[in-house]
Length: 295
Image 1 (cartoon, rainbow, N blue to C red):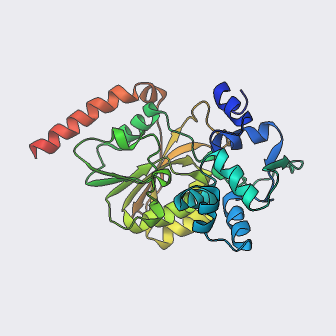
Image 2: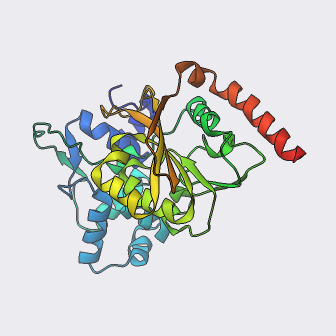
C-alpha cells in the first residue's frame, strides 16, 4: 500500500494498536497530521505540553502506566506504541491524536526537514554488507554502530574488530556515549543527522553515514566538519532501496575523516556489489579475519 506497511499492521492501527512509526507513515496518505503541533517535531512538542501541565516524565509515566524511559523515547522522537501515545494524550487533555493536514506549500529549493517518523527505516542487509565491504580494508580497531536497529551493519562487521553499539529503543542513547572508538558506521536517524555528526566527531576519527547527500553537504554541515577538523574523504553514490523514503536526493555512504583536507572522492557502489553484498562481504571478512589472526 501507499504508506509502505503491511495489512496486519494497518488493522492493528485501526484498533488503536501498533507502532507510532507505522501510524506516522499512514498519516500523509490520509492527509492527516499530529494534532498538537504545527511543526515536524511532535515529540518535543509533547514534552512542552507535559511541562505546561506541571508533570515530570516520571509523574506522567506513573499516571499512564509505563516507564520513564518510555516517556523519554516518546518525547525525543515519538518512538513507541500507539496505545501509550493515546494514554499520554488523554492525560494531557489532547482529545484527538490527528487532524486534517493543511494544504502543502509550493516546493522550494530547500529540502524539508527530515521527520522523526522516517528514522526507523531498516537498511537491507545486502546493502549494509556492500557498504561495509567497500570500506572493509580500511576499518580497524574499535567500531561503533550508533543506531543498530535490526543489526544490518553491526552484525556484519568483520569478527576481528571490537564491535560496540547504541540504540535508543534498547536504552543506549548514542548522544550520551563518551568512549573513544576508531570508526563509526551506520544508517543514522536522518532527522538527527547534525546532532549525530557533531557528537560522532568527538568520539571517532572515521565516520561513515548512509544518508541523502544533502544531509551532509549543506553549508552548515560543512562548517561543522571544518570546526571539528574533519573533511569529506569520499562520497559513495548508492541507489535508494525500494520501500525507502524517496527524498529526491542522491543516497550516499559519506566517509568523514579527521584531518582530511583534500578533494572529495566520488565513487559508486555498483548494483552487482549490492546484489552480491552478503557473499562478497563473507569473503572479505574471512580474509581480513585470517590476516588479523596471523598478525
